[in-house]
Length: 141
Image (cartoon, rainbow, N blue to C red; front, side, top):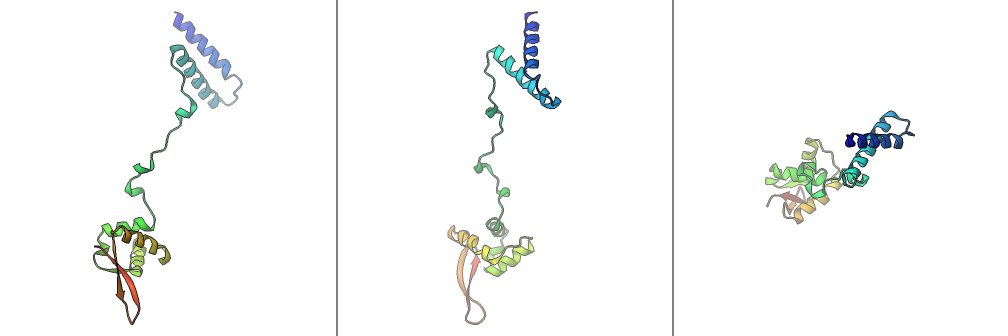
């Protein structure tokens, strides 16, 4: 019987706390929160702080490989698909990316190709094109 009175008193306190709130949905949520806090205080457990209720973001290291995007990720995908088994020029890389639906300027490909070369994912070699012009070709090691 005493617990019923305590609950009635707690409900009464919660109702008084939210009496000034006009929005019915907000009033319901606020009432529930106040009542939860009052019940927690009565049971000897400290009420949770609002900052503890916020959902935390997952760490950056938990991102999956599929979440990556951009020129470098697209070129890495092409490497995994075996595109670089034979030497390819940067123009051929751009054309293949366009075939895959990624329209990236030629100037935006040189950086990712260089990084993959530095990581030894790709190999870069000089090649003579038509005439005296030399270009670089990229291939797997």
